[in-house]
Length: 346
Image (tube, rainbow, N blue to C red; front, side, top):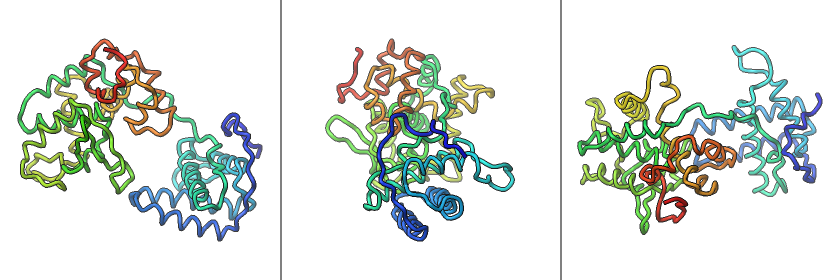
């Protein structure tokens, strides 16, 4: 099959010394790599195992002279797209570009592990482009008018209002996800100088390795909510359930999703037609656009929103101007951290 040269990163005519390893050696290295994924969830480890199992099949039965060059990785990419059999019940051959990217990501990270172990000098998979990413987000952002309506519902000092205000402002202002908020403990909140931080456990991880900064408005809302539980221990959850069945227990992701959805409906900003497009993730999405509209550098947005692929962050800048938050300093203050001295507009 002819090689699709579009797959290679433009200008990536780097020189790679071919490295051939027996299939048995590669299998052993894969086993060591899987063991090294101690901080990942069981589901994520299972995904890596499945993807690398396919790679082992490829080098054992399809391409036995795989030598860890970009051209070899590119042929594997084309195999996944055009020849790999799909799961039973899905019919046909060849993966979608989204599915192919998952397999290629597993190989890319395995190759990086081999570089770190001194087996390879460079990572050949880094020079091969994955699948096409969607040009638009599936979730839509809130408009400024909708955001005003939502925030108007969060005035009050009862437990539910305090909890929901903290949830919304952390999603909007710090870009925290439902799973990160679900695992957030009292002891994970810390103040360093003028800044507030939260140690969070991201998707697919066991350890709380991320430490996003929290804007002042969100930090105040969080303090007001936590103050309702003066005897709470550092290991107690920040967000608690208020239902009769699980009163005081850690708020589940599903309950969090329902709570935010209920707020959207009470504020009359979500209808049945856009229920799938306006979700809790829309708050993070809105905050990202506000950051872009404030004029901060893309590197700052990537750091704050914990985005590791620059084109993903650049999409927010393509949407800059659609909200008009630059005309609302009060809205921008919900997301910006003044102590960083990066605010470019009054």
